[in-house]
Image (tube, rainbow, N blue to C red; front, side):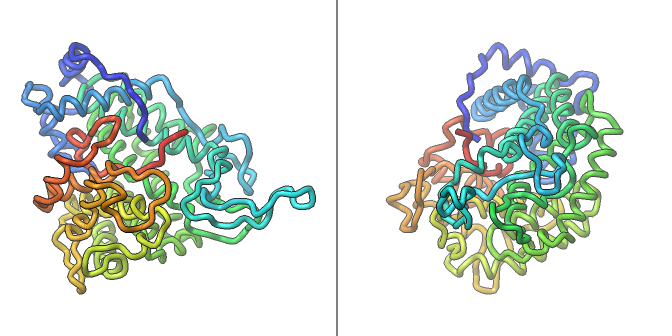
Amino acid sequence: MRRQLHVLGATVLAACLALVPLSGTATAGQAPHTVVTDGQKLADIQSALKHGHATQAQRDALKVVLGKANTALTAGPWSVVDKPTAPPSGDKHDYLSQAPYWWASEKTPENPQGCPYVNKDGQRNPEADAITDHTYRMVAWDAMYYLSLAWYYTGDAKYAKRAALDIRTWFLDPATKMNPNMTYSQIIPCKNTISGTGIIDSTQSFSQVLDVFALLDTGAPGWTGQDRAGVKAWLAQYLNWMQTSPQAKLELAATNNHGTFLDMQNATIAAYLGRRDAARKIVLDAEKNRFPVQFAADGSQPLELARTMSWHYVNFNLTAWGRMAELGKNLGVDVWKYTAPNGATLRKVVDQLIPGALQGAAGWPHQQIGVFDQSIAADIFHAAAEEAHDGQAAAALKKMPLPAGGDTWPVRVSCFPLDPPLK
């Protein structure tokens, strides 16, 4: 999400950094066992901030992160039980959302619901935003992430304690927790058929929450052994549902970004649970099975280019691959070096985006309805520049528009989900 945030003054920032390290905080210089992000990079950044060796880009990025974390201190906590209506199960603990691109055909006195609903790709139905689980999920998981990162870099206990409260409310407390399934995600009104596409509500951003858990596990105040055990039990059930349910089996068979995101999410959960061999197999299988289907020899993405929001979806799919590559690095798999039988590589796919990132719609000869946001390519360019030594991507970063709220990559060092902005 890109929201306007007030920028903290240099004095406040210096005071926050002076808190590292304190009793009950992460050990300075010790790399956290993050699942997706390179933990050693985070530890190096923490050390640079503490000792005054951080770059200006890192200091600027931390200001933005702290602004987001400070906003999160007084928002929430969020819960799936707060939605106004229950899903078909009758249990508000089950996550519920509506498919965003499906619209009523025509509402009449004889057909008040407007059945059947029809698909209008890329055109978001405002009805979908009336179901709060979608919005709460997006805001809550982002809040957890920024709070945990703010604590890791500053040592200020208030951030860790608030992150722990948000996590307990969403995942652990019996009165408010989400059941570990996505059975009723992106349901289509007037239909009761089983679909897996709604799982994207989770897979597009849940992997960042695994890094939240990993950061708090390094000694966060307010984060207990009971919390960690509860999260692991919840995750084990969630992963089982994400691999065996009818919805998950349909989504795993998806050949486009949906399949990439589910593979990536399941691998991150498995890795956090200590099932590293299983996680590694998912990444290796994704390389072998998805590269030849998703990427043409020239690095284009035919399945995503067919969408009405092609610029968004080629970047969306690459967000998943960027995170898959980051995860793979932690598992001993170099996704950046993989070459498909047709010659496609992840770097070649990334470089296909450079004209669009530099020139906007003028450099993108494909359909993109709505806003053309050049900045959404920034994270995958950062990743390509750092991990694949892609000079073209590095050069593009110096010329393209960067995220309006500030480029936080210098302290995140990880591809971040492309959630739609709140309205």
